[in-house]
Image 1 (cartoon, each protein chain N blue to C red):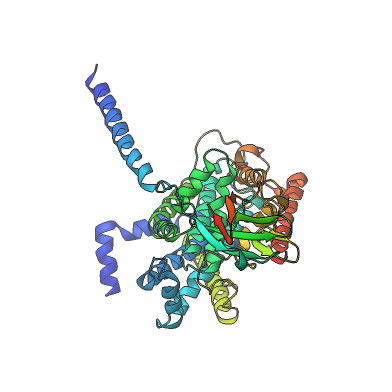
Image 2: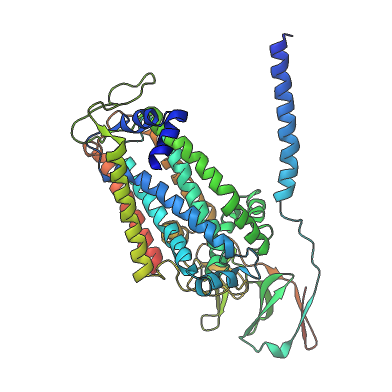
Length: 136
Length: 364
C-alpha cells in the first residue's frame, strides 16, 4: 500500500471512530430519561363528584378527569388530547370533553366524536369501594 | 485620527484596493428594485435580534420557577427593559415577514433558477432556522401562551408511527413540556441556532457573490440569460456600484424597517403579545384562546380542517419539501412569471389560500 493511500485510510478510520464514539454519548445525553412505571393510586370520595359532574385530578403525573356519568357510573380519563397534547375541558351542558386547541370533541366515555383526534382519550382503571373511588 | 487609522489599515491590508474591488467595482443591475434590498434588511433584522437578545440574557433566568418573573421584571423594573424586550418580540415577528417577502420576490422574479438553486435552498434553510428561533424563543417567557403553543408544536412528531413519540420526548425531555424543555429550548435558542444561522448566511452570501446577482426578468435582459453549462460570474459592466449606491438603498430600507418596528412598539405594543402572554404557565389548564403566531396560523388552520393527524402533518411537510426543492422541478429557462400564466395563477392562488387560512385561523 502506498504511503498516501495508507494515510487516507488511517484518517478515514480515525475520523469515523471519533464520530461514532462521540455520536453514541450524544444520543444518550439528549435522550429523555427513561419513564419510570408509576403505580400510585388515587382515592376520592364519591360525595365529591355528584351525578353529571366531574373532578380534575393529577394521576401519575398526568392531568386526568373523573366523571360521574348519569346512569353509567364513574370513569377516569386522561385530559391529554390525543391530537396534539392540549388538555380537554369538561363541558357539562354538551356532556362532552372539548379540546380548546383544535376543536376535537370526545364523549364522556372518551370516544372521539368530532375533530382531528386520532384515538380515544386514555382511560385509567377505576373501581368503587364503599364510599371511595380508587383510580389505579 | 480617522486619516491615521485609514492609512494604517491601507499599509497593512490594502484597504482602498479591498473597497474598490469588493464594493465599488462590484456592480448590481441598473433595474434592481426595492425587493432586492430585503435580504440586507433581513440581515439587519437578525443583527438587531442578536443584540437585543444579548441584552435580555443579562436579566433573564432560564428556570421554570423564575423565567416568567424575570421577564416581568425586565418589562417593569429594569430601566428600558421593556424597550429591548419589545424590540426583540416585535423584531421576531417582523424578521419572518421580511424573509417571507424576500422569498416571495425571489420566486416572483424567477431568481431561484439555474445556477442559483443552492442560493434558494440556503435561503430556505435560513427561514427554517428563523422559524425554529421563533418556536424556541416562544417558550422562554414561560407564559400560558408559551407553554401551550410549545405543547402543540412538540406533539407534532407523534403523528408519525414508531419514532414519533421518541422524537417528541427528546424535544421535550420527557412526556410533557416542563422545566427540562425550557432548558433545552434555551440552549437551542442562544447557543446552537445563532451559529447555524450564521453558517447558512455565509453560504448564502458566498453564493450570491460567487455567481453574481440576478437581474429582474422584466424589461431588458442584461446578463445571466442563455444556456448555463459551465461556471461563469454574472457581472453588470453598465450597472451601478454596490457601494455607495446599493448600500444606501439598503440603508434606506433598513430605516423603513426600524420605522415599522418603532411604530408597533409605540402605538400597538401588545400586537404580538396577546392574551396568555402575560399569564404564568399552568400545566394543568389549557386556555381557550391559545393561537400560534400569525405566520403559523395557516398550518394551524390546516391541521384543524384535515381530520387525520398523520395526513395533516405529512401534507405540510410535503408542501415544505416541494417549495425547498422547487428549482429542481421548475427547470425551464423562462424567468418572467408574467409569460407563464399557469405558474402565475398557481402562485397567486397559493398566496390567496395562505391568506385565507391565516385569517380563518385567527378568527375561528
